[in-house]
Image 1 (cartoon, rainbow, N blue to C red):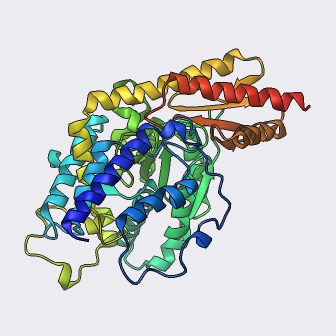
Image 2 (cartoon, one colour):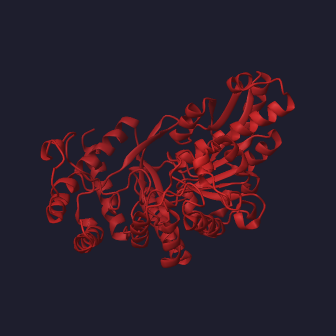
Amino acid sequence: MEFKQFKEFSSEMIDYVGNYLENIRDRKVLSSVKPGYLRPQLPAEAPNDPENWKDVMLDVEKLIMPGVTHWHSPRFHAYFPTANSYPAMVADILSDSIACIGFSWISSPACTELEVVMMDWLAKMIGLPEIFLASAGQGGGGVIQGTASEATLVALLGAKARVLQQLKQANPTLVDADIVPKLVAYSSELSHSSVERAGLLGGVLLRALATDGEHKLRGDTLREAIIKDRADGLIPFFVVATLGTTSCCSFDRLDEIAEVGVDENIWVHVDAAYAGSAFVCPEYRHYTKGVELVDSFNFNPHKWLQVTFDCSAMWLKNPNHVINAFNVDPLYLKHELEGQMPDYRHWQIPLGRRFRSLKMWFVFRLIGVANLQKSIRKDINLALDFAKRVEEDPNFELFNEVTMGLVCFRIKGSNELNETLLKEINDRGKVYMVPSKVKGTFFLRMAICSRYTQIEDINFTWNEVQESGKAVLSKQ
């Protein structure tokens, strides 16, 4: 494809994308295709000669869109949001055109240096302590990971490297095989499944601890588990505190957990994947009390801060523990200016990395902090509006307090009745929700996922819930 064709093709695609997003409310939110729908509609082999880009554009609507679940529909209420915005999309075009693989400073200096600065900007936007800023000169700094799952694994491996170093320095006769089988990590029973997976990939025991009546992990629970495990000859070394659980958006007591971490010399990692974006609003930063004591902190701007996937922001108080764990430095990756700026390949699982900080730079400059705050507050207010309707309807009840853009609710009655309600809602095909289950109680999750969602969409969704509820109750 030559530049002239590229201009025509890209112009057509920009128009298509704009029309798609601005009119997404008109599309059925959930795809109705069956598994295997696409293969019979495609050739068995790739074409030998180039096709016309106009034919490709026709096939996007004909073949791809029928199989798309529209996450940015204002009637998509499943999972959590995945962010987008026009500035972030344009930044991705530039990133794709530069096409650097920014594993070291020398491989593309701007890729590294913009990331260092953007991570400091973002840390200040959400009120992180100065110790996590690269510009503070205290050893801390930020890095863009692909996902919160990666960030948790990176933190766990950094903590593992730290405890191995500490124990072998104290007793030089020890080897890894003496220590690793005894290592134990902790998290809430409501932590994301990726936390459990990090334990598996890290080769350590991970213990899921019970939460209190408000679905929070408390410091006393953690301390008791550590004391018992030490008495049994195990070596506690790592804990994940979740701010905004996937199941019900509960917040572990970070202040208590962080104090235990300091007392017991274990690494505290904060997973704020979804809710972290809300900390751009000062009124929600009370959930981060104690953050100055933690070792690492992560959230996903690609969930709720209008930065497209993938962009997971992670800060480390002392990156050297991760660098020491991941440092494999062949001659062909070395350069004579090493040590003056980060070589981010040492801060992550993969070697290669995209120029993702461009997305942050474009979004922060072209949208601005005030508008990002306004967007977060709008979504939370919409969730609170939906929650008020639940409370006012005698047939429904909230599962827990609504703090962010997620409402956990249920029809009054058995788990089976609520399973039927969810099926009825989704079978109607006009809105889409997913369930959760906490301590034996099944409920529905209504997440505000689209930046296009307005009060009329909440009216529509609530009407769907009420009508589905009536249908379910009429069959009893």
